[in-house]
Image (cartoon, rainbow, N blue to C red; front, side, top):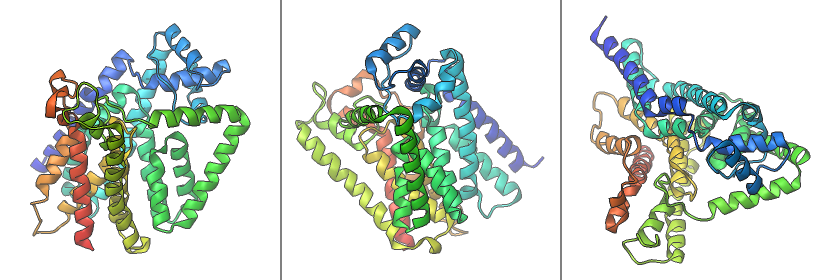
Amino acid sequence: MSARRLAAYLMFLVAIGLVLDGGLVTALLTADTYDFSAYYLAGRAVLRGYSPYDNERVYRTADELGLSRMRFVYSPLVAPLFAPLAALPYGIASRLAVLIQLAGLVVLAWLLAPYLLRGLEGEDRLLWAGFGALLLGAYHPAGYVMRVGQITFIIAPLLLWSLALANRGRDRAAGATLALGLVLKPVCAPLLLYYLLKRRWAAVGWTLLALVIAVGLGLLTMGVDVHRAYLDQFLGFTDQPKLAAGYQNLPAFWERLLAWEGHSPLRGSRMLVELLSAVSAGVLLLPAIIVALLRPWRELSENERLGELGLLLVATVLGAKASGLHTMVHALPGLIVVLAWLRASGPERPWGPLVPWSVAYCLLALQFQYRAPGLEHGLRVVLISSKLGGGLILWGMLVALFARRR
C-alpha cells in the first residue's frame, strides 16, 4: 500500500472519530437533543388533536414528558412529518432522528465531493477525498447539529440536490426539491433567489407551484387559524436578535456590542442596533446579488454556480437575526469552492489565499468556549462572535475570487 493511500485511509478514520466525538456519541447516549423536542412536541400536538402553536398545551406536554420547553416556529406542515416519531417514546425518537441526521451528513458529503474532486484521478482523488472528509468531520457546527437535534442535514442536502438537478436541466425536480426545503425551513430561500437572478424561470415556476400546492394542502388539513398562529410565532421569534452564544450573526454582534443590558462595552441603543444590522446585512447581500447577475447560467461551471450560491448563503446566514450556530453548516459550500479553486489553480498555485482560508475554516470549524463568563464584560464580548469573524473572512474571499475571475 502506497503512503498516499495509507494517508487517505487514516484521514477517513480520523474523520469518523471526529464525527463520533463531535456530538454523535453524546446525542445517542443521552438523547438530550433539546432542539428536537420542538419537533417532537409538535408531532405530539398533531397526534393529540391540538395546534402545535398552542404554547400553553405544548409546554404542559413537555412538563409531563420531562422535556425542554421549546416553541415550534416552523411551517404547519412540518408538524405532521414528525408525528410518526412523536408516537414513539422520546428516547427512541431522538436517537432515530440523530441517525437520520447522520445519514443526511453522509449525503451532504457525497453531494459536495464532486466539486472538490473534479479533475482528479486515482490516488490523488482518494487523498483529497480523505482530506475533505477530515475537514467535514472536524467542523464543529456539524457535530452541534446532531448534539442538539436540528434538521440541518436534511435542509443542506435538499439545497445541493436541487442545484444538482438544475445543473442537469431537470427544472421540475429541482423546483419540487427546493419547495420541500422551503416548507421545512426558510433558510432555503437564497436558492430561490439564485434561480431568479439567473433567470431559471422553469425552476422558479415549479418551486412556486409546489409551494402553492403545499400551502393549500396545509390550509385544507390544518386550517387558517393554525397558519395565522404560525406567522405570529415565526415573526415574533425572528423579530429580535438572540444573544445566546449559539447565534453567530451580525444582529447578535451589534446587540452584544451596543445594547446588551449590563454587558455592552459601548453605549448604544436598540434603534442604532437595528440600523447597523440592516446596513451590514445589505453590505453583505449586495455584492452576492451583483456577482449572480453578472454572468448568465450557461457560461458558468458547476463549481462557479455553487460558489455564487455559497456567497448568497453566507451573506444571508450572517445577516439574519435568527440564524443559529447550526446554520453555519451552510458555509460549507463556500469553503469547498474556495479550496477547490486553490487546488485546481495549476503549478503556480496562489498559496497566499490559503492563509485567510485556513483562518476562516478554523474560526468556523473549531469549538470555542463562548459561554465563558469572562467574555461577557468589556470589549471581550466581541470574542463571543468568533464564528461570525470566520464567516466574514469567507465572504470576503468569495467576493474577491469572483471579482478576480471577472
